[in-house]
Length: 334
Image (cartoon, rainbow, N blue to C red; front, side, top):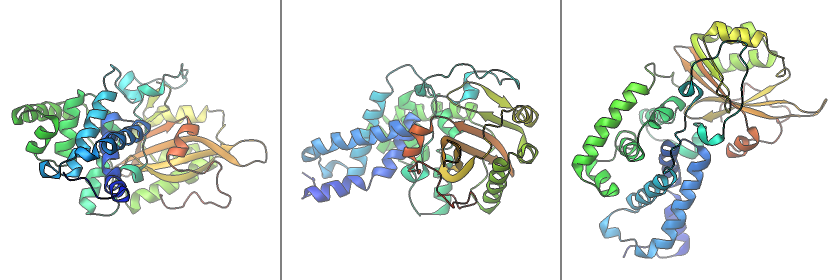
């Protein structure tokens, strides 16, 4: 039997797989919170069964992924499919009411890059990993039945061999091949056509200009950075906008409640993102308000998703409870 020799070694051997497992669980579950829960449950089950792990039958990594897959499949037994606002209904006209919020369980939720992406490594591999956690791609995965979803992630994202996936799912090679073909066809149909821009100096400059315009509440400056067909949404509301002109109308008619806001760059879903703080009490510090995920295409901002519920999201991103004094919004992405 192949269990490690000491408790400390056991913990280290499990822990070294945490980030990769979290990335897999996030793509399966579309929630940073649920991915964390799934990894913890995976480790609990693995710890209890370590004395039965047999290294002659496969690697510890494969064994952990099998456990994580079962955990995710258990968590996906309900009918709910997580989505983005644009998956739930048509765009709203400028001036339309926000409507009632819908439960957190309905939304594709963000995740910190650091929790699901490996540090370092080949730049091309990292770019592909980033693309596979972007909000639009994760939302597309949610159109797949859970087992198809697992097959596509294992084969096309994590680059497992078909034989390995068949062993993990305890199914035939033919079933894996068939599931992968169907999954690829679905994702091609629902995923966006235009790839997002890489996180390079050009996008960092675009984000810095967006931050500066946002903090000045410079509507014309903000709008000038938008793609003509840009979208804006604000979970947990199903309200969303399409088009630079519609977004401009809403911003011009806004109540300016974001005056004095401060933005702290973070890294979420392989994209640029911003933690938004805004003034609390008069003369007091800026306090958490929202997490904004920003997608750029062709040098312009194509999608802005403003997640409310900062009291839940900011701890997940290890963000401070008040805006740090002396911090500049032009700081590099964390």
